[in-house]
Amino acid sequence: MSLLQQVKEHTTRADTILQSAAITIQLRAQERDSKGERSMAKTVDAFNALFGHQLTETQGWQFMELLKIARSAGGNFRRDDFLDGAAYAALAGESAAKEDDIDD
Image 1 (tube, rainbow, N blue to C red):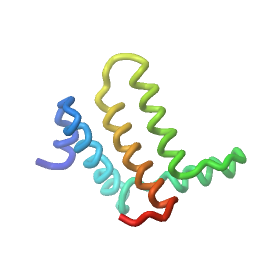
Image 2 (tube, one colour):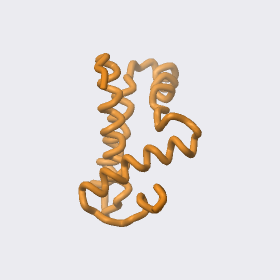
Image 3 (tube, rainbow, N blue to C red):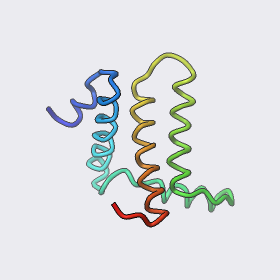
């Protein structure tokens, strides 16, 4: 089964949502021909330059996670809100470890 087919599998079990989140990160890397979904550093740099803030990369991922939480609270269940939220939480964790200079 391809990565895309695995993500499209519509189950709501916690382990499947987490696995789908990991696969989604891999798919984004393939779509962009990069090492993974790592666009947040550039995004917060641009945001900070435009608006004079000092967001960190981790805070950028956490912002996106909160966006998904707010969307999920606003109506009917959408698996995508939780899948993306899990992916953003994982990316925030990776970023926080990097900011604190913690090796894997």
